[in-house]
View 1 (cartoon, rainbow, N blue to C red):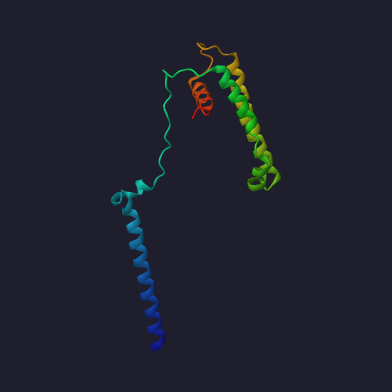
View 2: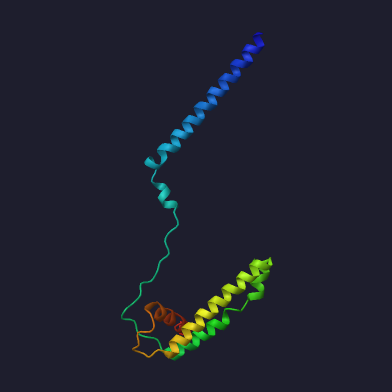
Length: 141
């Protein structure tokens, strides 16, 4: 009987000890957001986006259209390798092909829009102009 009482006493002591440890952990977690401001440093930094320049020089539209057309064709380079590495299943391969086709169509559309635009024409948005600047300026860099 004495052994049974000592075992029960040990069990109760452990239960009480575990309860106190859990209470201390929960209390610490509850006050941590108010005490510790270093968690903000762990957040991922925002990407740096270059602002659109209103006074930017318009790119040579014919050259830019040609570069956009080239980009629409280059989208498909490495497609088989991507399917090998990332695809692995038929649904993934289909999505990869659809994404490449969508990107290619976007570049073709921009090339067509650029060919129909005139230098002072407002049919090209500032984003389109910036994309054309970047793609056509890639040979000079």
